Amino acid sequence: MNKNNSAVALRVDCATILFEILENGRSSRALLAEKQARYTQARDKAWLQEITFGCLRHVPTLQFWLRQLLQKPLKGNKKVIEHLLMVGLYQLAYSRVSPHAAIAETVNGCQKLQAGSLKGLVNAILREFQRAQMQRELPPSAAAQAGFPKWIFQAVNEYYPEQAEHIFAQSNAKAPLWLRVNRTQTDLAKFCRALEQASLPFSLSDMHPDAVILERYTDIPSIPGYDDGWFAVQDGAAQLAADFMQPKKGERILDCCAAPGGKTCHLLERQPTIKCTALDNDKERLARVEQNLQRLKLNAQVLCADASKPDTWWDGQFFDRILLDAPCSATGVIRRHPDIRWLRKRTDIDELVALQATILNQLWSTLKPGGVMVYATCSILPMENHRQVTAFVSNTNDAALEVERQILPGEQQMDGFYYAILLKS
Ligand SMILES: C[S@@+](CC[C@H](N)C(=O)[O-])C[C@H]1O[C@@H](n2cnc3c(N)ncnc32)[C@H](O)[C@@H]1O
Image (tube, rainbow, N blue to C red; front, side, top):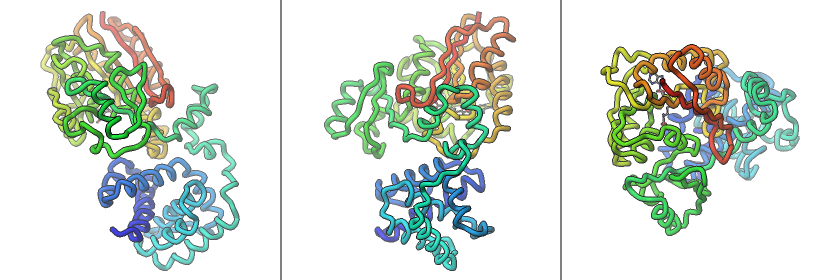
């Protein structure tokens, strides 16, 4: 794609991704990957993600401006032009794109979206916005100003009145790029030297013996040692799972809800002699576990099964340790996946809490007496975390809560996460 074509195509792709997320409830991960694959330049791929994520962080404000500027909502196959307009408004209000390019390239996107007849309207709206400097006016509700749906805004304020503002700011910030060094293939010092030689600045974390935090975003396969399995991308909070698990030589370990396998691989890197089963009920995601194991040169049994029904897959031999990285609201990782806030509904939470409780109860019978279960989520909602675990312990005679930790987004540069160590007597 030449430069001019790609400038228009990028705006069109952003608009289409926003449309699919906000109107059809699809998640950004696959959509972005599919669109990014069309571009050869790393710069274009990064632009697509940055502008799409930026728009997702400001949806209520962009829609507030749009409603002021657009007399009648667009419908049917013209609806996507509203999303193209949001992309245009975002560039004018929040990005460093020159206003001239922002308007011209966005207007030209109409043609590609089969809406050439709306070019005049889009042009007029973006020019009006630029002239009137409306970007100074914000929507009246505090939730909209923070860029969150009301139910998340209220929940965070209720459970974390002191930290709420910080949580919103952190959840709207760009997440750092954490890497986990694969001890079985290299060591931290050698990997750091390779980063220095490649002029990739980084920092280390006292709390994370295997971690490196890159100071700027880099195309992952171009980082030294990628093909040799020297490292994997994994947030610092997720890297704590191996510390909480403390896998010992030769133990039989279940990593339940394992895909795409970040924590499975870390457990194996820490203790390659364990017999690890990585279980998940999503076949496509399990394929990524296989790929990760292969690249990092590790071995595990990969099992496609429903964690809530051990009678359909368990061979009757107890596990010494279980990691249950339960399906959850993902409210702790909104900074990495800004679409989550629009995709998750308040009603999903009750269903997730019920599923977590069922999996917890069912898996408990597969853990040996004296064994350890680590329950984890990337949520900051107490009903999925502290309340879930305390309810389980009070209903289960042989369960005791040893330690728990709620990490809030941004704490020591980490994602929001929850861990509980449960002991079976
Ligand atoms: C938080 S993600 C796991 C992330 C993973 N542990 C890692 O570190 O890479 C939760 C996983 O739970 C899986 N899952 C959801 N319901 C499940 C069920 N009933 N049985 C097994 N896996 C399930 C999802 O497919 C998803 O891969």
